[in-house]
Length: 299
Image 1 (tube, helix red, strand yellow):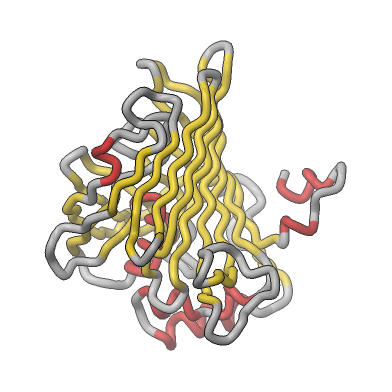
Image 2: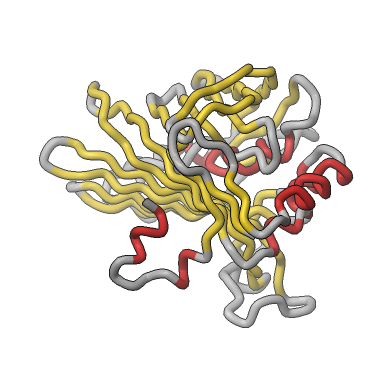
């Protein structure tokens, strides 16, 4: 089975005849993160690869931006928290959905390149780990959030004074609200799309950036409001959409999702100044296509 979008005005193009069955499975399973995560869509041996175009505000100016979001199922070793090369091993691995966000944009004479990878336990879309790397003309910043020596820690390695080689425990405020990483929202929110009109979460701020201030290690309270967004037009086409507004002390971030399964992210606008719109999405085992000329598969 493969699905993909082919430009402005297009809708889902289905190959293999299984998409309807997968959508029916989602309806029968009901709403919630378990229903989304359990769907056999993630077991087809491919990744969901979505491409976006938009802008990022940096140094007071708006920069053209290209981005991708890749979501794929993997098996993670519980002792080292990295991918199992042997696949699932009873008692030793955890099945996760990996979300890879990649963005790049020019800043005059040099480029910004940013990558954030979040890992969510497939069973309930609970947070497991995040890694982030940022490169620009001045240097490299790397952040890891995840288990270490029996606790969850935030590690930062940066070329900025006061932020280099720092490790602090990740401490969540008291309360029963779900613990969520901002950089996992493009997937995690898809598991909430059929839920109530509003909810509360504890949210770790986005780690994407060349700086890693201590505030980035401190989760904050966030409110999520869902609404019907009507028809949304993006470069990939026109879609009935659901809007999630995520409000934190830093402002409101907005995420538009396709109302139809599998609820791909159509558009986002952040309080920090980034705006992205879907250009194309497809299911592709991209790691098998690395020869010269394979770029045509994602054009």
